[in-house]
Image (cartoon, rainbow, N blue to C red; front, top):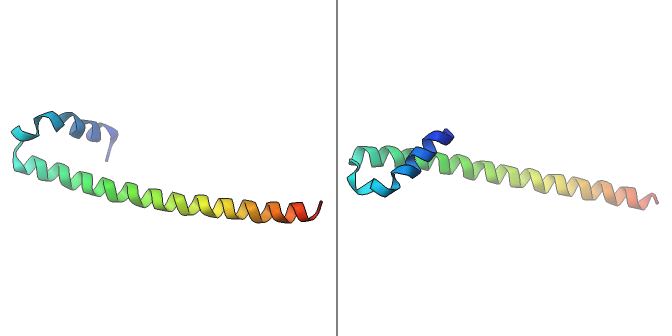
Length: 67
């Protein structure tokens, strides 16, 4: 979802009662997809960060053992 599209959805929050069901469904669908994509990105980034930390610690341990 583009930033502008997300901002447009946020801007409509004050007038939800006046929007047709089709528009509400459209927004819910877009937000559901965005939620899943964002969640997946966070999980993948977390795994990556954990692996970076683990790799760094293993290299540091080896480096320290040489001194």
